[in-house]
Amino acid sequence: MTAVPLPLEQEGTLTLSGQDAGATVRRSVLAGGVRVLTESVPGLRSATLGAWVGVGSRDEADGHHGSTHFLEHLLFKGTRNRSALDIASAFDAVGGESNAATGKEHTTYYARVLDSDLPMAVDVITDMVTSAALDPEDLEGERQVILEELAMNDDDPVDVVHERFTEQVFGAGTPLGRPIGGTAQTILDVPRDAVWEHYQQHYTAPGLVVTAAGGLDHNALCASVSAALTGAGWPQDDRSPLPRRSSGGREARGIADGLPGSTVLTVDRPTEQANVVLGGAGLRAGDPRRHVLAVLNAVLGGGMSSRLFQEVRERRGLAYSVYSFSSGYADAGLFGVYAGCTPSRVPQVVELLAREWEQLATGGLREGELERAIGQVSGGTVLALEDSGSRMSRLGKAELVHGEYLSLEDALARAASVTADDVQQLAAELWAAPHHLTVVGPFETDPVEVAP
Image 1 (spheres, rainbow, N blue to C red):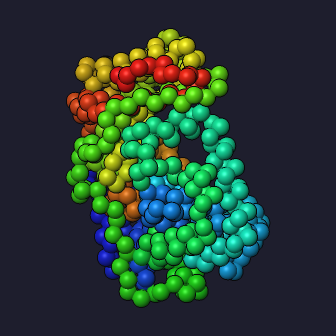
Image 2: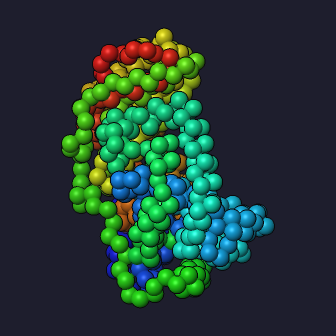
Image 3: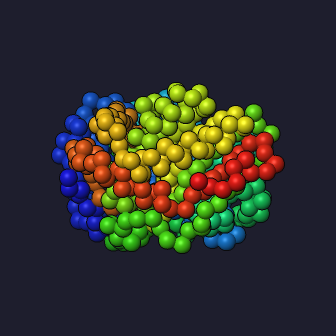
């Protein structure tokens, strides 16, 4: 169960996995500090390309909140070489697709095309990342689009309950507690200069990671990326990649310190259903027990056989949607359970959510749960490899988040090594952290007075 370290300084091409589920994984560091990771899958006629920038909403300076997501939108509006229509047409003409995603710690621009069209995808995606125009007229138009997107999200009570729960766990206004897309006010206020400054500061060769998976040749892809970056005028000297975010070392364990104590928040909305999240701080992304967390998640609320689904939905019929979830970042994480229910049933549902979690923490696993959960995690890991996009994303997270590559064989071995005691101990640690309860629904006062 050994992982392959991904050193920032590397000469030549490193083969990370000879035949991982029939695929070959390789990594190179190009001149200028750009890192390229590929997974060549024999027989696959498609390929997914991703350009990762190690900057997210938590990195925004005061007055720049929302800039990362704003910039993601604007890069599709055109470059110094292409219009927005040119970008869209390039992928439509070959039956491909392109998109992007902004997170709290990184931003990804990606495309899925036929293997023969991968050079085109490299050319277009790298042009977007390296040659932004940020035309003032386009910026003002996209400002209105983002305001509509924020309004749409605010109309979705599930989005709202998760957003406000995150704010409770990390603190309102903190880098991790802020919404990724900003607020309507910050988007209205942010000037073009702030977005341009954000782009100039963070979109550099040492901070860029290119990943691709599918029908491809590693050396050919590296050559395409180098040519595209040279054509964009990006430096090709011997620069080192930017250091990864610090998480207190690869062995950093436990719940982050200095987070808010227990809170209860009710958001009054005229909805037919109440949306409830109960949880608190979780594991850092680099915590070595993240494979234990995956198994715990499967036991508590990760599927139709999970405790929450069986107790809250199947036995009592109190909710249609009920599950557990987790998110990990460099120096902190969160863990919680969610349910949507009739408003009058909120106290009963909250009691059940808390009871099932506490029983796992104090009583441990029941017969058959460990084997079933490990099978669920292992099967999901293997099935995800059917999609080149999942493979591409796995490479990006290995490089930017974990600093190591874990082969499929090792990932499955780690899951199989989890014990019942491991799961109970982690459940107890998560249960012992301060609890936060978030409720969105038609309530003028808190339907539950204190967090369990």
